Length: 116
Length: 114
Image (cartoon, rainbow over all chains, first blue to last red; front, top):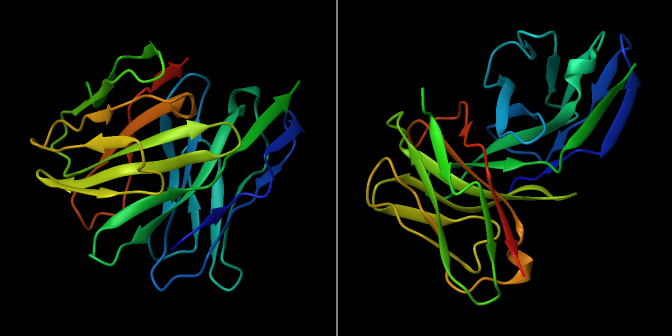
């Protein structure tokens, strides 16, 4: 079965500094990868996704992630963070079941805290 | 734009009581699922459904029942609540069985079992 590992439970970073949130997944033939963001007391929202094609995917608010098949990674980066980026970030993978359907497996999350 | 609606938002139960967490979506999504979120453990899949009349177990199904009689609704039942079921529960939906795109989440239901 698929698994997702987020190595950092918390990442503090100063405003306007760059940040990288790490995500690794267990190998699979077909991989669909996602990053979700959760603001306090809210549900999760999709930040970006990789389904196929270009290995570099971007979100509308400046985040990007690169699919690296050889390293089974999908790290999330932003060159300059804002206070409003403070949230919890979840990496997820879509895992194909034996019956041909899909289920989504999430990592344990990384709390990004942006400091003034 | 209702999206995914969960009720109740907060609930306190005593050990052994039963209850149902309601989830409804108005996007005609075939795929619906329930997760629980616990500190340091991320989101763990409880049960999921790929269409009306079809359900399957996720990672942590014990102590929970589900049914899917309509496309819109996917209730989660706790038959005999235990303190270990204290958690925040999220319902999420997506398009068809083979769809690998976005999951749409509800706002969550915070359950405390005393």
